[in-house]
Length: 634
Image (tube, rainbow, N blue to C red; front, side, top):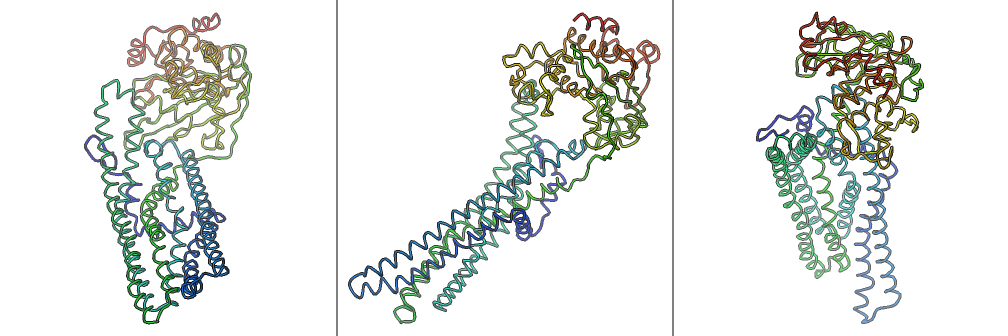
């Protein structure tokens, strides 16, 4: 459940699935067992080490009883301690201590390795799923929620697996202790049985009471993460509009609710821990009272009494481990449900096995960064219809075509569907109606990665990573520096990059904080050009450039698409400036998700009043020839 101001918003379907989870004990243990099965070596070693550690406690009680009966009592009776008996007692105590320490160290190391490995595997699975799911799925899930799934939910999901081997060892210890005490004395065995029943009852109460509170706390962690991410992402808007107090109140409301949920869980835990420590202490008192009487009656030896008392004294901390596992199980189940809700999602783009002709993707660029022999992709979109979840249709029965080497400009008022159409052409989203053909084949018939290799997209919002210029242009695709400089020249970004202190290695800061808006856009344009695409999609990608730089960039694009034979780089450009519109061979005017008119600038000025009004608002157009000359002489 997210918080908006002081209002509560209903939790998403994935959250509700987690809330409905029943039998967290059985479900949680089954999930942990499946996780342990993925790391059978370290998980088995951790369980074996836990059995050794806890078994050593039981054996230690027997050993101490033996030392009491065979060393201590005879020494008191004889008035002296024999060297042999003393060394025997030392060997027993030292051996048992070494056994316990070895089991402890091996268990912690092995269980820690198991936990970290299963967490890493789950995070990789979630990340791969994020990358595989379609863009439409991501539109319905806020980034903060996705971050929570990959981090805090995975962490909660596997938190109990580290103490689980110890809990298994403690369970074994309880059984072994009951058997050991039964052999020592039946009356004291009844005290042991009463202790075990009390411990089981307290743990069942604890798990039942804590479960709903733990679920609530885990869900609120996701909400707090989502609100925080949203506030950070919109920091500029918050500062500009003076909404800091509102955002603080919004985040504070969610944080207070999370705090209250954690406090409620903490209160239960604060009751549970003392009770678990108190029960063995009470049992020790009972054992001493009954045991001393039975020793006095001759029904029990002093060594057997020491043996039983030691068992109960050493049980206090191990018994808490069972409570730790039980307290973590509800959160583990909630985290697992939220993670599995992501892994169960099946909104994957449809792919085939066809290979998109790579010719032209590796074509050389001249010294000015202009493609020499690239063959553009033929674009044919027919009957396209698309709408975002919960909203009205954005595209309606739309037909768009672009021959190889042609430049098509998409012009229209805000909300007319221009950016959405670009996303459809790039297969970020698939149309709900109609078909997109690239080089005459259904775009869905191409193998994964083929369209991405042949299409370059410069989106409306320039996003840069907190990394070097080289990485932001190359994105790990392995292009050499010469190729990167060619793309920078084509985007008119080479001069300012060369002026940076470290050139291609210059760190740009978070989201390119060290650059201006126009510089960011030119780097994003270079990123789209570095692969030498056959189809270039520009979604208002020059809006932050000044007039001189835009003329230079547009002019170079004009040379790449106009000079020479047809069949060069195909360009679809969302145009909001007259200079970009002037580049186009064909202008497509959209309004309300439909193509209202298409043609040249002169034709649309006469035939489409809406287009004429937009152009007049944009300003006077600049002729393509003038742009080309400006680029040639730049």
